[in-house]
Image (cartoon, rainbow, N blue to C red):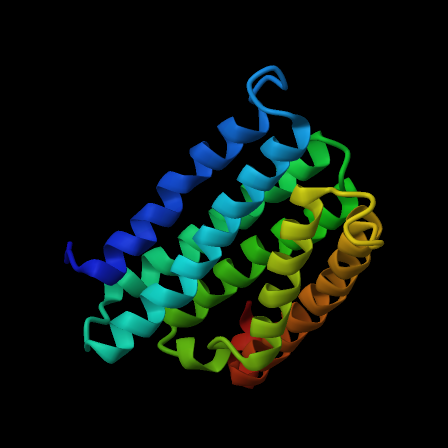
Length: 194
């Protein structure tokens, strides 16, 4: 297993998951609820920054690796899944949103693995639609973690869930796009025998 700064940043993102979860369960006697919310949002945002930064550094320094390519999306999906589960637990978003997003991540990951086994992984490589979906998810999660009902006149709960709905639409759209791309790669003999 290679060790370099981009991979260490990816591991840091995984380590931040329990930190982020513990913060949300801190007693309000330790910090006011608003402080807990902001601390959790900052940890999640830091994880999001490391996601961008590790990929940037890996490409810039020529430190890309198969292990890094495997670990990076795993870290992303674990962080998003943990955040969604906690937001549902604290009644800040809807369980249906979490089910759709987590279900899509599992489906697309399995699809990529299957296509990789057939030597066709590039047919389901990440596209800009997936990046827009990720950006909408991260922004929505941060807003819902802060959960301020009057943030300079903005209800972050309402707008966070509006953005989460947008993320869900993009999630389904991108999943259908990847499924269509994968289906187009299958030969007629493969589709009839399976």
